Image 1 (cartoon, rainbow, N blue to C red):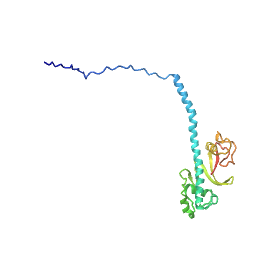
Image 2: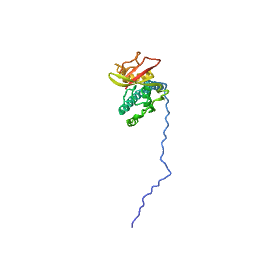
Image 3: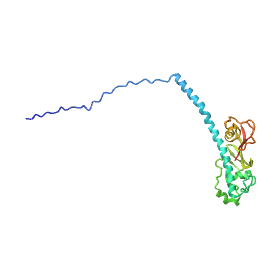
Image 4: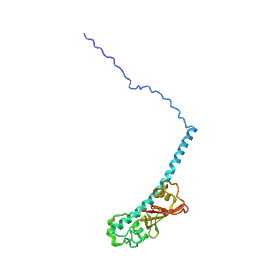
Length: 220
């Protein structure tokens, strides 16, 4: 005779949930006056260090535009004249219908005033006009940031160069270029421009101060 035994059945109450432990919220502590003072002091120090660099970067960007524009004008002038076999002297080059500084600048900025004889070689030189970075016109004068641009020939240490003059240019603009290009000892670390004019440097020259502005010439 066999006796069947049944295993006890465990009943699980699905509706029951594990007991949750209550977490007592912590009280948020506010900043003390001393902590606020310390934070403000740290922010002030950061601003004192960073602000001059931020403002200085603006002047450096503008100064770069002056030197880049001068380089672009001079290089384009040399390229088109070399490609066409004409003189690179601004005063006498036959590449324009109006030889001289005004005619050269108009050709370089607007592509206007080209001597038709040199149409093919001018186009094959594949230079880009600078009307996007230079403002103004031949009639009113070409400018960069309100500085009037003038071109001329220069012979520096036996080398024929293009002199690009800006008048007026702010002292900040002149100083940034002076620091970068001047051959004067200590110029790269200068914090202000010399009181006297510089009329001998082979790369950058400038006039005396005139109410925070000067005439600056860059040689390329």
